[in-house]
Length: 463
Image (cartoon, rainbow, N blue to C red; front, side):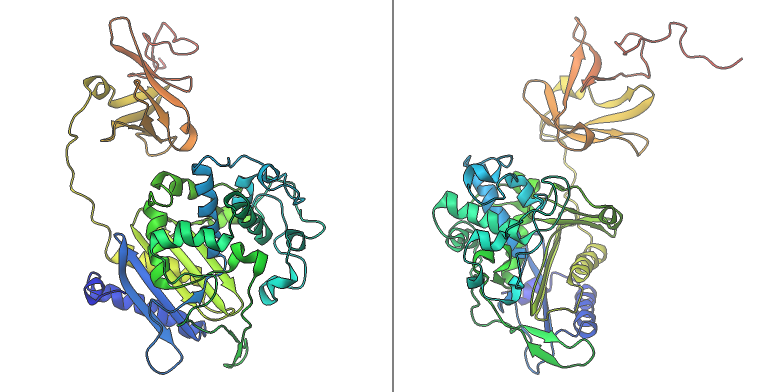
């Protein structure tokens, strides 16, 4: 539970702005209740709730159904299998789970919703009917599971994550729920996250679109579809899950693997490019207010959920409501992150000099030219380097040291490409080679092996 000391970590004005935002969302969205939490620096620093019921509002221990945020948990289980060497993301599903009729899609494509599968299972609507109506994978997929060529486009698919849950069961030899509890929920201390509701939990409601009256929604066990949307959770547990997705936890997934989950993995549709939306491996990505956000939204009849994280700001938000439609929780979550990030921006760590530096690497620091484009090479404390344009635009990347005097690109155009310093017989640096590009200390330096050569007459004006 969030203690009063934790609450005091945010300024009173920030706390009031957060409360105002969720109050507006609950009122304008006509939600029976809405509960939210904010995480900063790896722990919960604010919790708020609004409710239409007299008395104490829901706290961080009240369960709500979280819908498709469940998919992120399922993706974590699949990445664990990959990290253990039990499968490869490039493997077709058929290699590990034969006979589904959808096995040509790769595991990565299913994680990124690019497997070409239908968005929903065959009728009746799976979210509002018992999972017992779909006992087998064939019942979930239907006679024609594909809607698009495999790997060609992003098409959100609930059956795709049902297949991933079945994959986990096949490889582990246990139910999806058992594996999830043993490998994710228990290690991360998510004691209030479960496949079935546990008291106290909020009831699900539909609010009439044209009158302030409500109708209870049925709560169905999704059966085979559980890995796509079954889970119940709390703002307290999802706040802890947000910390894991930001930093990793070696008991579950390393920081490197959770970073991989946050990388775009699906081709975006044209409207998504305009809106700054993309999808990684079990995570939704968006660009909003000049910051990169990741997480996931969820909905099931009677419930809405959102988890939003900004790694750069070190802030995350969780928002849950118990209504079928109403507040735009993705916008609310992004606003909660923005409010904290702008009102109380992250204070950077003090600058400290590097403990040691290789003189031969220090000799490479400074300006370099690719043709006439000016770049700067900077050293990082971990032995890596960065290369970025001096003009503020152009290709940039960080590079990881390989331990042999070369570096490998980590992002952008140069991801996976090798950077090395080419030296003359006397040991002095001739140029940098980056994926066949020649970077020289001066523009088109005559003594360097510039492709195509350099005009011997040199630089000139027009006389």
